[in-house]
Length: 219
Length: 265
Image (tube, rainbow over all chains, first blue to last red; front, side):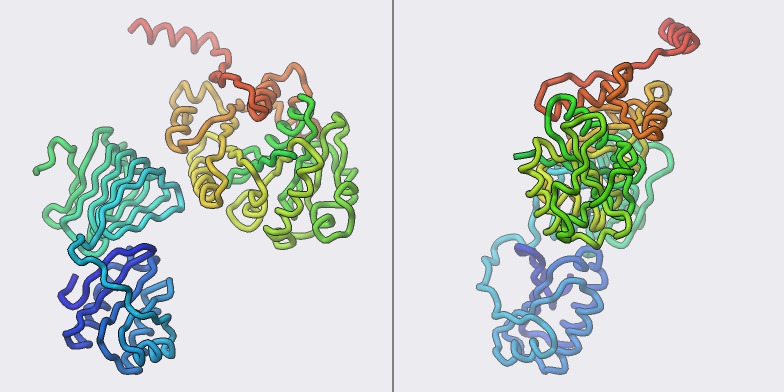
């Protein structure tokens, strides 16, 4: 993540806050990079862009709309203090709203979450932060999180941890027989032979994804 | 008011129609008034399996479009006076019906019977969505093959998303010998993956094919073991507490001998 933008998980999606005080160009480039790097997580999520008190030209808003359309499947909301910016954002094709009341900023930004369910084939679970799944992740299912993913069950599907680029994220499971593992920018395919039946942890080591039995994992 | 149960699977050819026909007949034999509905519009099959093909005048789409009254389209089974079929249209396709229309139709059927069993088409598209739209419960049929199980898993997720709760599972075409030899997924393997309640196991049985081709259903054959398994499922649908026993076949002499040698090692 960059100094120009911060991302918060909110009910029903992600809120991207753009620093009030920096140059728009810097923030805009940082935003594009984030959209590119975090595409797997952000692509299907509802985004709102919080511009705060920043004033933006109609031209810049058009440009922004163009970029958001390339990266996002869901419509993007613009949150802005300025009434003129909101009006122009609507002209550019956004849904514009006044910013939400300031959330208590002392709370940790990405949230941790525990989900009790079986993630089934065709289902995608997206989460900003660390995620614990109490249940199985079946073949054909995907779990994507910006933090680490812990599955208290069997993983047979695809798990993507550190989906916004965090290379320190790990994937743990009671039985890790994933079809594919992804951490940050790296990808690993399951070995052809049957996986271990003991709990395992996958993490990045020397620029590749390594899987260790939980008792061998260096803490 | 009838209970509405949809039989579905995701993958084609795993035994949805056979199960619908047998369960519908079994419930009727147990004294319930049953309507089986073929929701596979454009690929109608249930009438053939029940041997009622030549009695069709009106179909499901005719009822929805108002070309006939509901009772005119219901065909009485030739063996059982308590069983009726609402056939699918063969000359239309899935888009001929909407989910709202299907729910309205199902609500009309509720007052006509004790049980309405809907035979869903394969797939996850509009035909499937129509078939589960009006259902109170869903039963998933799968065979012990990875592809069928993967599709069943997907369908379970879709049923849960549609607010139909946890479906029940029928495992069809189990071959005990192959399971023993480790060549087929076992009931336990399947339940571990799908994590839903089992309502019955049906063995692989050639008699199903011959019965289907004759337009008869197996449950009518008192001597058929497979028919008995379907009747057990029907009893479980009625709320009876019948234990699900593992399917046994008779191991060949050779198998029993090799089993003896293995146990001595």
